[in-house]
Each structure stands twice: as structure tokens, then as C-alpha cells.
Length: 314
Image 1 (cartoon, helix red, strand yellow):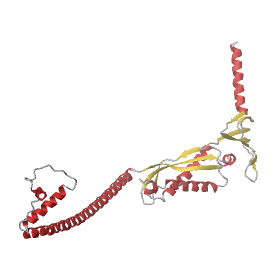
Image 2 (tube, helix red, strand yellow):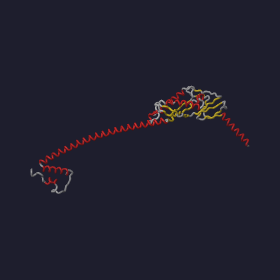
Image 3 (cartoon, one colour):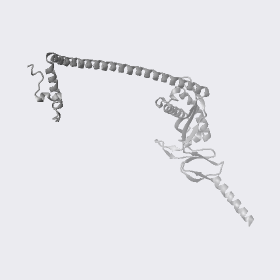
């Protein structure tokens, strides 16, 4: 019984190994190149660039059969976008500052057959792209430090740098013959750091700038305060002058009226008193006021009793 189980297990292992040797799998997100005795057949394309005959390319996902290696070999590539980053490298900006920059790029295999012929493996692709990506630091060196790091977002030119880097990299890849079959989708700046000595200089420059701004703000505040005080003093002078003129006019008017009364008093004092009594009555009785008083004891009722001052004289 045990011998039969061992034989069956051995047969199963042989079947698995044989299947592995003669079968292959291509997933939905992959494409493959099948070689026969290390030779390939290029795909045929029409005028629009569409593949009419895949040749050695396997574009459909699923399982397939091949001759055992080394007669036939299968090379599978991913159709997904791949990410690649550089190490931190020193870059000198256009104004002489030193920064540490880490770049990244997103790329994919656009032409699997060309990729296989020129690079064959994704490792080789990473090496080639790494050298090209390192050259992009020259683009950064054409910009000033405050265009990379700034508190004002409008002055930062990172998007412009990334766009120029992408255009330059695709131009470099397009000039390679035969083509690598690679399409770069994006180039970007992952990190920007400052060396320790540069950081200290930046902090000192920032402190100096802030102090200058504070001094300007204080000077503007002092100037504005002096302007406000000057306007207030001028307004005060105008108001006081107007008040003095108005007071003088009131005093003059009062003096004129007083002079009239003094003249009346000098001519006939009793008649002047009588006139003042009549004016007082007019003011008191203007609103239909009713008085119930002793007429003999109130001076302002004498005109009502018929006692007219100065009558005997007239």
C-alpha cells in the first residue's frame, strides 16, 4: 500500500514538473514574449500602428503550451505603471544654494517586443532609467532656491520643473534607436532637503527678512500714527476756532440785547420792569397755564390788577 502511494506521489510530481515545463500563464495585466531557440518573430503592424500579427508576442491572458526549455522560453512583462526613485543627490541652484533632491518617475512598457529586444529585463530598464533620471538634476540647477522652497505658493516652480523634466526624458528616450519601448508617464520631485549648513543660512536669512519686515511695519505704524495725530490736531484747531467764533457771536448778541435793556432802564426803570413782567407772563402762559394765587403778593400779576408802573408819571 505504501509503495503504491509513493509511486502515485512520484507520478503527480512528474506531471506537475512536466506541466510547468510545457505550460505557461499570462495574467490579465501582463504580456509575454515567446522565443524559440532564442529567436523571435517581430509583430506586424498596419499603417495606423495597430498589431495585425503578434509574431512572438502573447497579448491574450490565459494558459498556453510551449516546448520545454531551452527550446522555447517565455518572458512575461507587467503592463502596469511602475514607480522608480533615485537616491538623494546634491544639486546647486542657480543662485548658488545647495539642496538635496530625490526624484521619481512613473513608467510602463509601451512596446513589449522592442523592450525585449533592447532591454530584455525590467532590471536593465531600471538601470537605464536611473542614469537618465540622474541627468534631470540639471533642469533643477537652472532655477533659484526660492523657486523650490517658498512660503508663497505662487513663487514655487516645482510643477514647471517636473513638466520640463518629463519632456526632456521622453525626448531622450525617443532619440534612442532601436527604441526601448518605454513610455514615461510622470516625472516628479519626491523630496527636497537642505544640508545642515544651508539650513542654518536659510534660517538666518529668514530671521533677517522677518526683522526687516517688522522694522518696515513699525516705521509705517509710526508714520500712520503721526499722520492721525496731525489730522486730529488740525480738526481740534478748527473745532476750537469755530467754537470761539460762535461763542463770541453769542456774547456779542447778548451784549446787544443787554444794551437795549440798559437803555430802557436808563430812560424809564419802572416801565422796563413792567415790560420784563409782561414777557415773563407771555412765557408762562404760552401753554394755557392756569394759576390760582394771591394777586396782591405776586409781582407778575400786578399788570392784571391795573397797577401799571410809571402810570402816575405819564
